[in-house]
Length: 286
Ligand SMILES: C[S@@+](CC[C@H](N)C(=O)[O-])C[C@H]1O[C@@H](n2cnc3c(N)ncnc32)[C@H](O)[C@@H]1O
Image (cartoon, rainbow, N blue to C red; front, side):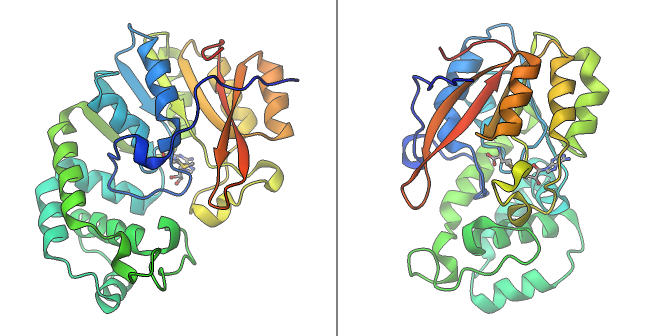
């Protein structure tokens, strides 16, 4: 099966607005031009559902750029979920904590070792750990960034002014962003009958099939039944867009369901080019 290359290139983080306060492993900033083209071509779609939300860059961009009116973000990881609960419902409290925090190694360690007493505290803890651990990885066993990613110590990714601005903007749009802490697969399955052509679904699952990507190192929840996910989406009339690694198992599922796919060449941190797949029910990008 020959997968054509997308005419839209991947972009780097400097080329699109960064809207999420979280640095997310596997984050989809590079995909934003595709998301704009996809949602821009679906004028009757008002609602975007993102069942594996993570840092939520796609949902945030879609709502903030008026590509959709509303979105529902779903995430199973309780630490990440606490962040979104707090950002959407207790943004002022989160902002106060960001402004007051001194990101020394010892303060970060104290926060990391303490059990949070409420949602705001929990959400703030997630934000601090996400921005001070190596590559933003929150999964068990992730280590603190030793020298910082540009040699500036543990706080090299802690930009309070930027974080406050992003949190303020999220607060501004909070009435259009719903967040559910649950299993994204169950959510899709429960709603399958209501997922019609007026709904867009952006699917970026943790990927571990074939052992190609170390999803289990990156996320606390990394086991997904990919066959089931493809079947659920095939059984709905929703306009979905999925991203996956280019792996034989995924190619077979695309063929089995008659979906369409394009490749996007990504540069990783070693500047090698890795193809990622964008899968849609019908051709969108060629
Ligand atoms: C590839 S990441 C998503 C990254 C996101 N697109 C971004 O740009 O930040 C996959 C996410 O799915 C979450 N996840 C894993 N299993 C899940 C499940 N069953 N339901 C909901 N979320 C799940 C993981 O915790 C992780 O945050």
